[in-house]
Image (cartoon, rainbow, N blue to C red; front, side, top):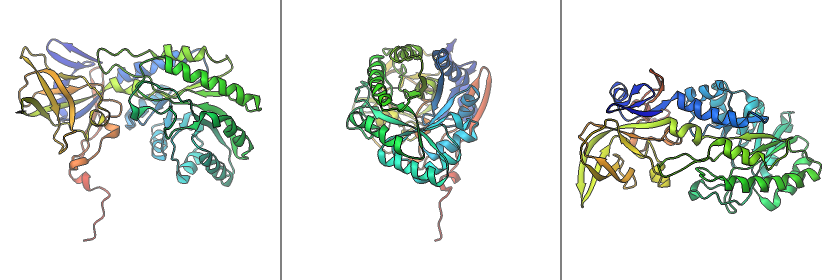
Amino acid sequence: MLSFKGNDLFIENVKLASLAKKFGTAVFVYSKSQILSNFKAYQDGLAKREGLICFACKTNSNQTILKILSKAGAGADVTSGGEIFRCLKAGFEPSKIVYAGVGKTDEEIEYALKNKIFMFNVESIEELYAIDKIAGRLKTKAKIAFRINPNVNPHTHKYITTGKEGTKFGIAYKAVVSAYILAKKCPNIVVIGIHSHIGSQILEIEPFKIAAQKIKNLVDEIEKNGIKIEYIDCGGGIGIEYEKSQKAPAPNQVMNAIFAIFGKDKKFIFEPGRSIMANAGHLLCKVIYRKNSGGQSFLITDAGMNDLIRPSLYQAYHEILPVKKTNAKKVKTTVVGPICESGDFMGNDRMLPILAQGEYLLITCAGAYGAAMSSQYNSRPLLPEVLVENSKIQLIKKRASYNDLLLNEVSKL
């Protein structure tokens, strides 16, 4: 929760400049109140229906963040064995963990079954047979839903479009009913649901409605074959307002539109990630140098594309704010990092005041896919993460050291 108090930018009741001085920069900063407020919007939306809100932990898998959400009653949407491990360590009930992903290995499937997770979202017939075989060897039953590809255009970036024909995700729409008939014949499989996730950063309700109607049509056909569908897993995908010109639908608006398509007997699973974490976390950095090249003004900061890859990878927009108001003249400026890549930028052609070396900037809405996608590229140690709750400050991940760069490397020379 960001606000200016006087000339200083605060997160909750903590001045961001004070966090920069205490922990150094660059640093990820999160608001606990914003996380819980965003999650509660989904809880309220589901209040009159049975089901689960499963946090998509790929967006941010810090243990403290996961513990906050597990204690608030969230389930978990996971995409790897490592995410199952993280969620179990954070206190998520196995009966609230749903496992998605197109490339589950035998080892990951076995790990999930041994830990008695709630459900697999199955993405291919070969995966179905692998789960059935491993469940048989372990003398257990695996509960599954098929992830279906409804061929719906969510009007978002092509890299985060997952429900259109030709992507790697899900079972082709025309093959879904036959897939369920095959699953019914598998001795160690229990069919309980159907799953769809059409993409991410979706700012319209209509794509969700179109996908839901397509799922409803499939459910009707599947149930005609004597296969009961108990859970409708609608995935995630609701966007956030990275730019002032954007308007994102509220969770209850999307959920109510979906509920209206199905009967009263269905239970629902929703898997939000970005809409819980993005605007709850920000990247605080410092101006190292200023330069002008070919008429282009640059601010060079200590945050790079290895810390926040979204602008480089998706051409994503993040608002950039000085943490102190100033009357200095605004000029068109490109904010870049220190990485040896021309694609290393945080924002192009932004109208920002002329700042001095050592002044601080906040790259907003970096709580989702910021720290989670960061790397040690250019041998840059991973950043610290800080949680703010009212006036309380908690370091939830230490800044990595140069020695940490060599962790797990083995040299016998």
